[in-house]
Image (cartoon, rainbow, N blue to C red):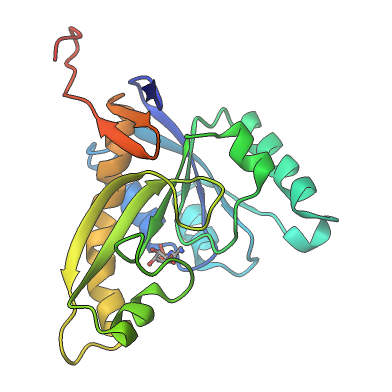
Length: 217
Ligand code: GAR
């Protein structure tokens, strides 16, 4: 089994394409001291992403990186890796980053990149997961934090939260209730990493016991 990160304060980069409520929730968890991390940089692939403004308001470095100004994904990701290395980033958190991660980013941050998805994976990967759940007629959905691998929303699962689907739910009303849970499980999952408790065993994560300052379990 392989430990994902040793115990210690995480140096995070958050990648976001949109609203940034998960980014905000992570910032709040850090402020409350529930999450032992610094957010070094917020990167967006969308120029007008509200997440960029949210970062600027918090005096966190906010960078717009336009994928269209590169010849291909590898070149775009090489630049992104350079930026993240320059900021001494140890873990990358995707928070509404609507882009498939390619081999360059994956290789550098192997097992050190996490994603949040608004469904109980492996059900409903991809876009509009909440609407997919309503359309399918499941009685429960929820959200998942997982380690990123080469597939879409397919890596080892760190944490999930279950949300009932109500008879009159639309995709939007379900999304709103799932979001409340997203804002809880994301910082909790990252805190497990900060405590050095996450190990990878094949396609599973194993969460180790709490290790106190003296190193005892
Ligand atoms: C969140 O619901 C997140 O789970 C989802 O995008 C939303 C971003 O909201 N991500 C995906 O669907 C990824 N497949 P936010 O910008 O307010 O954090």
